[in-house]
Length: 475
Image (cartoon, rainbow, N blue to C red):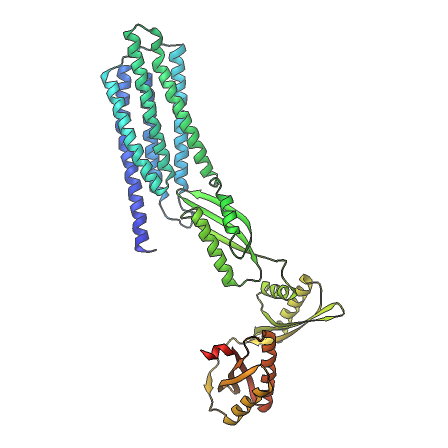
C-alpha cells in the first residue's frame, strides 16, 4: 500500500474520531443542563428532552466506539473488514430512540388524562433550550459534513438524530410559551401545552427512528442500493465480450460496498482476454459504486456461432489440452477427425495414450456428429536445450533458394541459419510470400517446401520456415 493511501486512511480515521468525540462532549453538557432545568421547572417537555439528550449521549458514545472499530482493516477472522460495526451502531441508536418515545408518550398520557403537573417556566428553561438548539445545530452540521465526506452511516445517523433535536427543542420552547400565555390570559386549557409538546417530540423521534431503522436494517441484511443492481446488469452486459451477466450480489459494510458477479464469456477466449473483460467489468462496477471491492467470476459459455472446429478446441481446452492441425473429413455423412496434440515429453507412452483416449471420448460425447478421431501425439518440450550455430552450408543454401522457384506464391528466401541442438541439425529461414495468400495455402506451401529441403539433406532433423508478407519487406 502506498504512503499516500496510508496517509489518507489515517486522516480519515482521525477526522471521524475527532468529530465523534466532540459530539460526546456536547451531549454530556446539554444533557446535564436539561436535567437541572427540567427538575427545577417540572416541565415534561424539558424532562423528555433531557432523557432524549441522555440517549443522545449513549448514542454518541456508541458512535465513537463504532468509528474506532469500523476503520480497522480486514483480518483472517473478519475478511470483509469491521465496517458492519457502524451499521450495528446505527441500529442500536434506533432502539434507544424508540425507548425514548415509549417513555415520553406514557408520561404525556398520564399528565393529560390522570395526573396534572404544575409547570414553572423560567428564564433558565428558555436559555438552556436555546443553547441546546445552537449546540445541536453546530454538531449536526459537523457530523453531516464528515459523514458525507467518508460515507459513514454511524455519523450520518448521529447527524440526523441531532437535526431532529433542533425541532424537538423548538417544540418544547413553544410549549413553555403557551403555558406562560395560559397563565397570563387565564386560559386553563393551555396547561396541556407542555405534555402535548412532549408528544410532538415523541412523534418527531418516531419519524427519525423509522428512517434510521430502514437504513440500518437494510445495511445489516445486505440490501443493495436501490437501482444499483439493474445499473450493473445493464452496464456490464454492454461490454464487448460479455455474453450475459449471470449473477450480481452487493453487500455493504460501513462505508464500503462489496460486489461479486458472474459473467458469461465465449469459452473459446484466451485466459488473457478473459482477464481483460473481467477487469473492465470490475471498473464498470466501481463507477457505479465508487471504491467498491469487486470480484468478477468468468463462466465459459457455448455460443451458437461455434463450428465443429471451435467445439473440438473448446473440449480440449476444458481439459487443459491444446489441439492443433485439426483436419475433418466427411465420409458419406460421418465426420472423421485428425488432430495433433502435444503432451509433456516426460510422460510415458501408456500415460499419454490414456489421456488421448479420454480426450477423444470426451470430444465424441460432446460433439456427437463426430464418428471417429485419430490423434497424432507429439512431445511438448519441457527442457531448455543448448544450441550452437554451424557454419553456413553454401551449397545447401543455394539449392534451398533455387527450390523456391518451384513454388508459385513464394517470392524469395532469406536469413538462412544453420545450427546444432545436441546431436541434431536444424535449419531455419524466412520466406517472403504474397500478401493475399490465405493461411491454409501458406501452410501447404511451407509443408511442401520443408519436405523438399529434408530430401536435399536427410540428416536434417528439423526445418523451420517463417512466412512474411511481401509488403513487410518493402519497409
